[in-house]
Amino acid sequence: MRALVLAAALLLAAGAGAVHAATQQEVEEALTCQCGCGLTVHACNHLQCPSGEPFKKEIGERLRAGEDKDTILAAFRTRYGEKVLSAPTFHGFNWFAWATPFVALAFGTVGVVFAARRWRAGGGRQPEAARPPEASGDPALRDRLARELADFDRET
Image 1 (tube, one colour):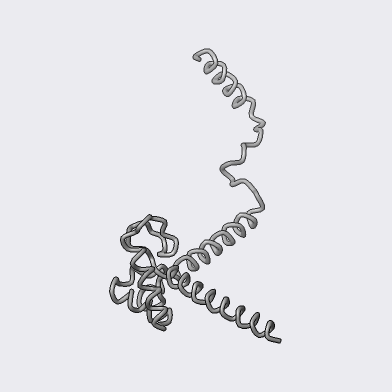
Image 2 (image 1 turned 120 degrees about the vertical axis):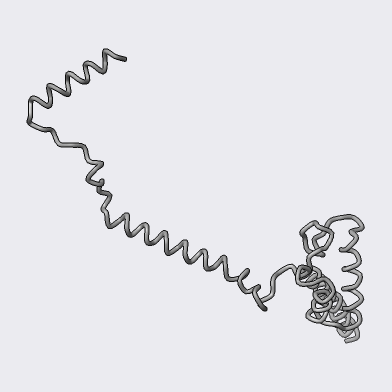
């Protein structure tokens, strides 16, 4: 019985550490590193990064102090502005950054469907101007064509 209680306590302790690490990673991935690499704080691979390392340290301290993700992100946003967030928020004009790709995709789909229907309605027929003229029965025109082609061949 003692072994079972001890095993359960160990599992809970291991799970608590994993939750803390996941929260640290989650907050780090929600912030963009300010060193210019364009990566998240968690993904920044610069050794001794001048902004990433202090961010990680501060995030860890704030998590140990009991602050939640939203509070930590709000503090960084207040200090560095909206550019520190790795994803735009839905507040203000930022909704446009989220909606634009979907609107463009919808317009593109409508355009392709419209073009396909229009092409299909034509039945693949050639326009009138692109059709070759039908053979004419006028012998004078045929003789003139033959002479002009012969003259053309001699010139080249």
